[in-house]
Length: 290
Image (tube, rainbow, N blue to C red; front, top):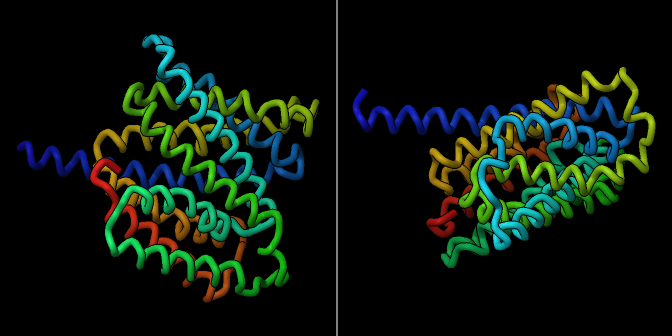
């Protein structure tokens, strides 16, 4: 195989990794929702992260590289942001549809992409995203007109805020440690969320009946997607990776429809497409290092 063919194959494999990672994450959400009635949101997130930690530590073995005093604070911020992002996101999908929650959460990476660019076209992406978000928030929902003007919306937006911090600090620790940063970040995130899960769910976390679902959730929504994303980042330009990730709201809405029977109306679908276009456009026109 010639060098151009090798690069093409590596790129195609990396693109497939991002798409598969996104699909795995959506399957994990479906499993998580089955646990909500049994151990609550905080208990679910706690188990998801805690069960992923030993697997990620075994795979990436972060102890092989010594962490300097300069590298430790970014790792801690990265992990704290990861834990808060996951907790807020799962709180949001408890009350609002998955596709809507992911679309609102994408305000975080969208803001990071826009902040990194100085091009005039970014004004267009800001307008498109703002209009799409307004339409998404104001459009009627089949359950009730106020279901989207609830705590779920605020949690989704909060998840977007923490996602932005996660992206910024994830780049810092990723350049230095690669996949090892994922293992360390998830360990910190688990430590942040665990007290809330223990307080909320208590002994219910030890129920044998929930562990198979919890283990599968940890695997498909944490271990596999985070690891695949790290591998893809090493093979793809940052812009390409960001544009692929921008498909998240649309894939989430499809997953919600197929797996969770969450039906959105035509206006909401158009709004989600608008957010996908705005996020992808902003990422494609962002600074070269993204």
